[in-house]
Length: 572
Ligand code: HEM
Ligand code: SF4
Image (cartoon, rainbow, N blue to C red):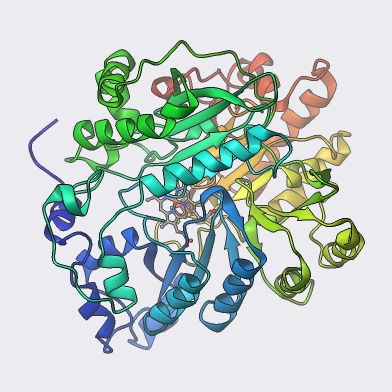
């Protein structure tokens, strides 16, 4: 490590607790953008400056500024929204966004295409339903995720309660958000301890992600996150305490083997009363020990790899004044959602809808946004965004069951027959994401149709196989934990990863590079054939790919890049 700090660190430090020159930049009418330093700061307020990449060539030809607009991401702990909050998003998406809503892999909503002059109005409407976008992006604790299943046992309620408590505890305290977006009065700054008691002036070295899981579902992908809590149940089905995980993360850079995805390590077991204290301690150790010189090496996963888990655990226990016990036994079964109807408590039920890649819109095929608006207008339960980009209409009364079922069916929101599609996710990528090297959300549906034909030919059409695609190696749709992972390399080209565990506990491994559409089909078809012919009873596709020798198993982050490529089965 060096004493040199990265440019982002200087920007944070000079920002006066995330103010920068944002307030002035918003008033600047000559451009739809904001200045470069503020582009970094605006992330802490939940926004990214983007431009429509589809329009770049035409606008360059016409010597026009890029088609700038903002993506706004909201903070929704556990992904739970009231019908009124749903309706507010629906309204702003149509009034100020691009007419679509994006449910994300981290249980929140993104609105795309909001132009600078509409930002304040959009945030005001979101604020009116008691939601905000502070810390939805940036080097801070992001949206806290939680097992999406609505109350089915006291453990589910306890998990949501913990997610909300951690979210509140770790929300930045700076008054900058209200000042800038709601024209609040500037509140004079105090010392670090007064303004940001947990983060201080320079916040965290990098983003920080926390989740709460309730076995047997690992829908939150606990091993993909910086900090995780896994419910350990008591005899009554409540929570006896939490197994704590640390140091998971997805992002890496092509061609830089020092960067790698990593599954989280088990830190120990804590009492219910100690969970928030521990979360704060893990965050502050990372605040102080994380790498502030190299952003590609700044996540908690590298801090733990560099310092060692034992040393890290000792420091966390010291700061929290908590003694962690040895991890208790737990077992996960899957990372997917239970699509369709399930029973709730007190005569209510839940319907998990399938939202392809989380994108909701009205188009010639289906009126998904309008249908959900109609449901929200009379539904007296809740809406829950799942970590798989799906949506649960939660706590539906017996009287409304039928009507909601038929509305959802008509809008094409019920689970598809294809086992691959049911277990698919894609990140946003083009045209909004500035980092995308290849298509993702706009391409995966077609690729799935082509793969489904092959699967059907081998009698595998209904089998649950997890497939995830991203437009670049940053990993927003957690592709390194998919049985089939596809990661954009360049226009129309993808790296193919195989061999992750169905329950989210093992990373996959690079199998083939730079494949185009035909290449992906040609690579996977023989694997499907072999799986259909040779699998053992109950054997998952990811496990089979390893046992049959198609890829080596990845034991953890550091060996993600080892033994890559086609293994014995094809090399022969
Ligand atoms: C170095 C790493 C990363 C960078 C620079 C990055 C950057 C971005 C950007 C620019 C977007 C906006 C795309 C758009 O909406 O147009 C985005 C979306 C998103 N990212 Fe990341 N990201 C990184 C890693 C991750 C990881 C590892 C996760 C999750 C485990 C994640 C979760 C998300 C989610 C949930 C979205 C929203 C859209 C979706 O569901 O696909 N990101 N990210
Ligand atoms: S994975 Fe890459 S392309 Fe996809 S949304 Fe994230 S940053 Fe953009």
